[in-house]
Each structure stands twice: as structure tokens, then as C-alpha cells.
Image (cartoon, rainbow, N blue to C red; front, side):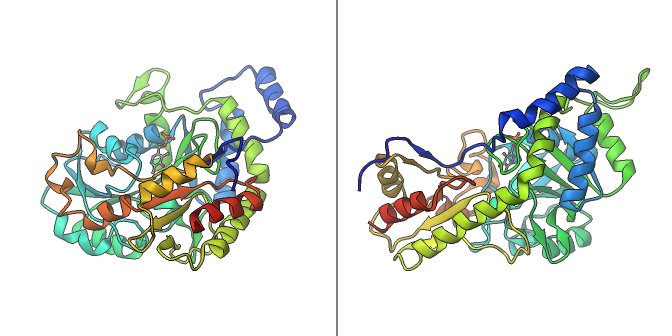
Length: 370
Ligand SMILES: *Cc1c(COP(=O)(O)O)cnc(C)c1O
């Protein structure tokens, strides 16, 4: 096989035709409102509620500020049970509100926090569970809810990967006290930078809206230590435009996913990560595990792909618990997190995006087949 001239990156940002953005930009120029909950911001909030099937949404300038604000809205402090197998922002958000992340191991099949290991980590200091729907695959929401209810804990879902994913009961964003989305450029739905909190009642939404606007209640009253989390009108315009084609985009991703699964089946030592039976999925990532039965190590395969100009990513390696700032936490040890450690050393996310040609999927699969 010959090396591709142009790199095939793990993802490409969704960029709708630039001409289609112009009418939205014109609206912004006509309105002369650039931010602070402008008309496009409001329109995107209501369109997203409809599209996602959720009650209320509050848009943010990015997913990390949305996560921090969600924790702040629920007054989270003390210890919070979370997964080490995620993007570092998950734990960072806890630190920003002064809470301590307590790492719990993951389930080997879903790669989400293992609900059977949560109870052993609960102490009198525990206030919440911050779980991640990793790669968009649903957490065991029922078990988590049951544990949270019996110990009086809040539940926050980092749903940064889970845009548009549904389960038997509708959007998975309706589980837990709050769910948080990211609309970063690399995500399936992007507003350049952006994010959102999904909540179930208007009172909570209003509180969150205050928190993202410095804590202003009226122009003369600041009632809480809020932050600037507002989404700009340009970002909202990008979101509105992208929403028009999102179903097609997800469908194209689904075809890439299906093709990978066909081409990678029966390769000894390669295991595609399966979902948890979602009724609608977003195909945001294509993770594979390079197990002991494969002739190369994960890093050797990663380098081999790179030598052919296929730029995969080792999401999530290193684990959050292995970064120097978290490594000394009592719950960060390898003994406490065997599955997460093993997975982190076997994982590769292969390129997936709507325009990725099936020829290129063949090319990538052929490299892996060896
Ligand atoms: C992308 C991501 C975030 C952070 O979102 P930003 O919009 O980049 O701030 C948080 N958690 C997870 C799991 C993510 O993938």
C-alpha cells in the first residue's frame, strides 16, 4: 500500500457551505446584537430542545464552563465519584468548584463508570456522581440513579460525546439532575466553541442563566458568584445552520461506522467497542481495542497508521488519574483502576467524519489487517 499524500485525521469539523452562513450573519449585523442571549441564541435554544427532545437548555461558550456551572448550580462540594477514562475537563471541572474527584473504575464493555464499583467509593463526604457517556454510549443510568437515590447524591452527566443519542425512553440527556454538552469544533455538532446544560425545569434554567451571566438577576442585582459563560450570536448562527443538516451528517457517520465493523470483523486481536443498545446513535467516534492477540502493540499499530498518514488518536490515554496533578490522589492507583488502565493502553480511535470515503475506510482497515 502507498502512503496517502494528505493525512486522514481522526475527525474533521463540520463546515456547512459558507454561503449558507451569510444570511445568518446578515441577521446579526442587522440586529446589532452580538451576544448576551440575543435572538439567534434564543432560537438555537428552542430548536435544540425540539431536536434533542429535552425540556430546557442553556447555551454556553464552551463545554467546560458549562460543566463547572452545572456543578455550581447544584452546589456540589466535598467528594465526587467520577471516571478516570475521559477528557481531562471532567475532573478539572470538579477542581474548579473545590470538589475532590474520586476515581472509580470503568466497565470493560461500555467503558463507562462501573456502577457496581460506585458504592464502595461512597463516604460521608460524597455529594455527587459525575459520569461520562463515553463515545456517546449510554451509562447504566438506571443503576446510577438507584445508587444516587439511596445515598442522596446528585448525578451530573458529562454528555460531551452524546449529542443526539436516544435510548428506549428518549434523549439520554434527560437522565440525572443535569447533563452537559460540548459543541467544540471536534464534536459531532459544533458552534466553533460552545456547550450547553440540559435541565428539566424552568427554575433551574433561570438559575443557570444567571450563573452564566455573572450572577446578574436584574441590571441592579447580582445574586451569586457567576461567570461569563454566554454563547455569542456567531456561534449560535453556526449551530442553527448545522442543525439543518445534522440528521444527514449522523447518517453518513453511521455508514462509515458500519463499514468499519464489516471490514474489521475477524481480525484477530482487534475488538470494536459496542454500544449499550441506544435506539439512536451519533457515531461520534470509532474506538477499537488492540488486544494481546494482535501481533502489534497498540502504540506500534498507532505508529504504523501514522506512517501511512492515518492520524488516529489514543482517546483516552493517558488516563486523567495518570496526569501529574491527579496521580497522587488515593483513588488514582493502578490497583483501584485495572480496567481503565488496561483499556487506556489498548484504545485507538480511528478516523470518522461524514465525508470520510468508504475507500479510505478500506485503506485504514487494510493497514490494520496487515
Ligand atoms: C470535549 C469534552 C469536554 C470539554 O468541552 P469543551 O467544549 O472543549 O470545553 C468535556 N468532557 C468531555 C468528555 C469532552 O470530550
